[in-house]
Image (cartoon, rainbow, N blue to C red):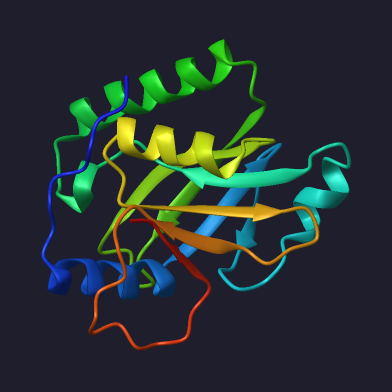
Length: 161
């Protein structure tokens, strides 16, 4: 079931897109954590998963970037993981945070999820931003909002209407 994100002001969308661009993203395999950088390729994932045609990173924590209690976040995270498994999508643990760790949340790197499928899941779990990239391509931020008129920065962002 898909739902629309609540309307956010242009100022909020601008502020959050800037924060997401500056965030730190990581994925885990066998206890080792590896960086993902917006605007750069992620060759480690490609080497370990040569069959994957695309990659995504999504969290179910703190919908609409509004803090929520840990128990509710963990329930939503479990629901997201169960949904990925039910769809047969291979996924790995991920972690996103502000550089100073004032904001942090777990999530999932998902293999072979097309951008439309990612957008559907982002809306379902109330996420304004997620990451997606094709094999060999640079990581892009996908914002579930139109580009604010005030956002003039050239950045690897896909703005959705």
